[in-house]
Length: 264
Image (cartoon, rainbow, N blue to C red; front, side, top):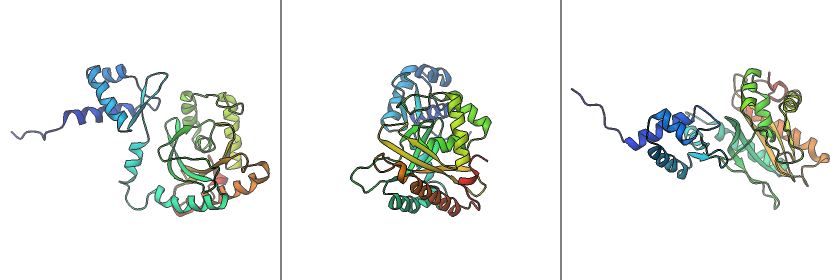
């Protein structure tokens, strides 16, 4: 009888844990994972610590729950045939950075967070940094609100159920009803603003990126100090962000105007 191919038990266990974590964007606790995988808690703990050290999972300091990071997404992007969205976005991000003088980034929806998958940093001395793999809240960031506003209403309500509307500044939207109203305005405008909602002194502007079939697959945005992204410069920066987002959408096959059809 032909024997099944040999496997490495520790790798198999780690993969099982990753699959279990993928089922819940909010994360799972150690004992829950042990029960679901039928593995000893000590074994699960060692595997999770290995995955944590390698950057594949992180742990909520309050609840103790483990959840996936964006590292798997980053690795998976290299397996996509042809030019990836990240590769296609780089020249557009550079163009946006040069036009606005601010850091530009490409962000995708990752559970109940927005995940940065590509970034081009400002050359200004006073800049806002961002990095690939960074996860930011959805309710108080411009990119996050673009991604939320693009969701079908049933999916949006499901995400809202799991969002923690943490107050970061006095400008943060902290109620579901207010966020719903705000997202309606984002759909009508075709772009979103973060006017010091996530961090005092930092302002952001973002617009949607659509694929060939019209789905919003990402948000592209800029972040900078409030001393440069001001009321008198806002209109020009919005136009630049919306224009570059439209150009990127067209370059990956979208035939229409992505900003004008956000959420539709």
